[in-house]
Each structure stands twice: as C-alpha cells, then as structure tokens.
Length: 252
View 1 (tube, one colour):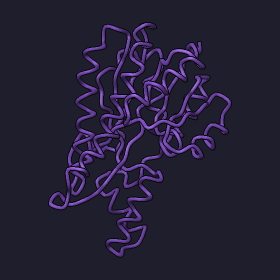
View 2 (spheres, rainbow, N blue to C red; view 1 turned 60 degrees about the vertical axis):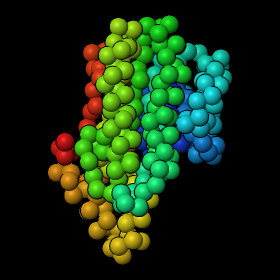
View 3 (tube, helix red, strand yellow; view 1 turned 90 degrees about the horizontal axis):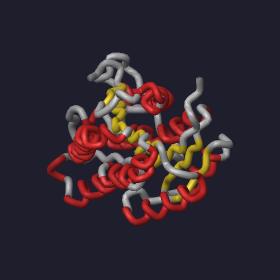
View 4 (tube, rainbow, N blue to C red; view 1 turned 90 degrees about the vertical axis):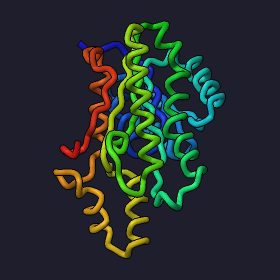
C-alpha cells in the first residue's frame, strides 16, 4: 500500500543531488518544493515533474527562510519532510585560511541546515510525523587534507543530527543525515577543474585522485543518494533515527 502523500522541501534543489532527490520523491507521489538562490535552475527542474514546485530562497538567512516556508505552507500545506541539501565546498591549506572562509561555509552548511529544519518543526510537531534529513558528507565522519573548514562544517551537522534526533524522538520526527563521498555532480566538476588548473594533471587523473580512498574507485551517483533519502522518508523507516549514513563504497 502506498504511503500518504507528503509535502517535502528540498534545499539546493536546482541541480545535482537536490534535483535527484526532488525527482525521486515526486515520482513517489509526494508534493515537492525545491529551494535555491537562482531561479532558472529551479524552473528547469520543476518543469521535469508535475509534482515539483519551486521558490527562490537563501537558506542561510533565517528570516528569509521563515517567510519562504510561510508562503509555501499557505499554498501547499504543512511541510512534512525537509531535505537540507544546499551546501558549498572549498579547499585551501590551513595556513592560508581566514575567518571569513570558515564563516561562509558555516553559514550555508550548518546554519542553512538549522534554518531549514527549525522552520518546519511546528508543522511536524502538529502532525506528529516528520522527516529531517541533511545531506552531509564523509568529511563529516573523518578528516581530509586541505578541507578542514569544510570538514568542520559537516562534523557540526553530524553533531546536530545526533542531538536533535534524541530531542525529537518522542514527537514522531526522525532526524538523520546521508554522508556521501565525492558525487558525480556540478560541484565535483568544479573541484576537478580546480585540481587540473592548479596541478596541470588531466581530468581523468584528477578523478582518480578524488576516488582513491573509495574501494570501488568511482564517484557516487546522485540517484544512489536519492534512493537512500527515499528509504528514510518511508513510513516503515520510523526507527531509523540519529543515523549518519555513509555512501562511500566501503571507505567508511
């Protein structure tokens, strides 16, 4: 039997993993609202499925998120599922980093998750059902060279997940994260481009460097992440709580 139709919000829904998650949840008859800072990518994704709507929103700004949620709630109803996918990445040697490098990552990768979750909390509490899912990273479960600020932001998300899951466990709300290694997305394409420009190695050599810690020696596919998210959202996954699930081919 199909589970009841839910209203899901996916941040960073205009490309990559966010797009894959939005399409997967929409295919399962959920109503999906995708958020992002740029209108055009959101419109392109929304045009791919009748169950997807879109709204421009900067997830790092608390009041903007609250107003955005109020708008979509009044149109589409209570928000039952939040996929906090929006994120940014940066690579820099520690001795060359500035406070602003850390702050900019924290504003999107941590505060953005906090804003996305908190603004839907009252809906989930009222319905005694909810799913809060962050797209974190294996960098939130271990360390990597040259991405200490990024890794710190993802470790913070993992800590938020573990604590919030305990706090909300009695309210019918589960809180989890999915932690992929490098994914075949535009964000990783930019990382590969930076590596080739800085080192003069080929694209193929750059990819090999990124996946060397993955025993399967490949990039993760966005739909692999989307399918795990879909499983967590299922009615029968209510005991999956406080988990930070790696998708990394056995790296972790």
